[in-house]
Length: 161
Image (cartoon, rainbow, N blue to C red; front, side, top):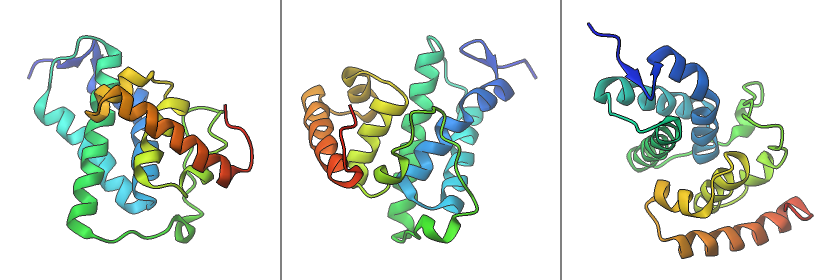
């Protein structure tokens, strides 16, 4: 079997480089560690099975985020149940950036705000990039970002940026 590469990286390197991003997306989306693990595994399984071509690492990362969100959405539709992370405090998630001190506040928001705020503040995507990843209009993302900031400010109790 040939050495398959994704944006120049071997599969193991992709998992090592993007595992925290995919875990964070899944946990923020599902609020449940065990379910997030399932979606995490399915995301990388799809990468291995489909072996898509990527222009560069950013394209690869965006693809992984999109697939992780889709996996979580599918899981939610199939199971129609969510268990709070309160039951899983010992399974702490290490978010990929130090700036993620608002993670607890993000968990209080509806998923549409969580996704956009996470991609904007933690993954540091621009509005147009988020729109592309989420298959939404840029103006919709701007509005969601504005409303999400307002809701997050109420929860967090201060200015987030």
